[in-house]
Image (cartoon, rainbow, N blue to C red; front, side, top):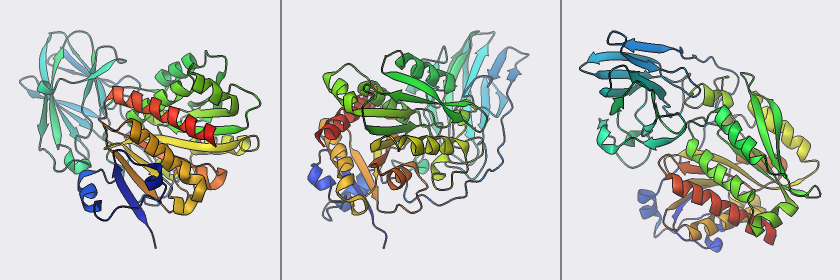
Length: 431
């Protein structure tokens, strides 16, 4: 019999969490109504290559070549534009292939020879308007579009999931001769992520190096944080298997910066633990503006059983070699979804070894009670298929998929990443 348990917590004790995440029957009904329930069981899908449709890259010109739209930059997604009259434009966003998770990524530039306000309507292929638009003058620094300039069309129902999103949206944008970027989330493409990796690698105990190539021959970079060559314990951290999941990346970024920091705790931790990080698992998808898949047309987080895709094979091969040198004691895969949620492996499977994950969740929740913590534990590890199950089954490390909400505030993401790092360091040093 399959057991699937979910709890919603504000402040919980480690005792409650380590008890296989069982619900209190007196509160379960309320929790199910108020907390994010998670995505449910992941279906087993083939991971051999499927065709994808690459978007045309170029510039659309309208109004006697006075107004322009473009997708000629890393991370862009814009598949069509039409002028409707009266400074109203409709854009279309389509996925790289189907079927696909409804994560309708969009990113485009717009500018005009005649400064003015225009209205842009977002339309999607078999989806709804999931991501609230971000706006930027330089493609690097993004802020949410002013709410007075956003109009939901066909409002959704409920709190979470694609049905809660509006059918489409109209954006009012002030255009000038200089391009304005409009994007579903901040643009953390392969070049931007590499800048962060290189910057952090200026520390003497951090290096980065390639571990292989992606489907489209982009380099996959791994960051090694190692303050002591005699360290025998290790952590494995990955992020961005799915390109639009930027909030998970931002939490991971703060997590790694904290472990790499100058606190006494971090310095002591690095004496016994090496940390290996692949911050961008899907560089092709990020740079091509994909909704979810790599250039093989596959969801990478379904390929940790058969390893048909080069990106998952690169990490697998790296782990197989490093497992000869290190005892892996923790693994985390950072993602994004409708609300903050943890996906651990149930202690009915992992036993005492996996209890540290639930203690960690409880400690984070106690320090950050202002945001509800959702936990969905699974007792199924066959097939491995997803990263956390592969990490546990094949390398013996307690592991988790750590998801952050699409709209979780950026300051809170940074704080949560910091707290998560501090609490896992504390727990691992107590072992």
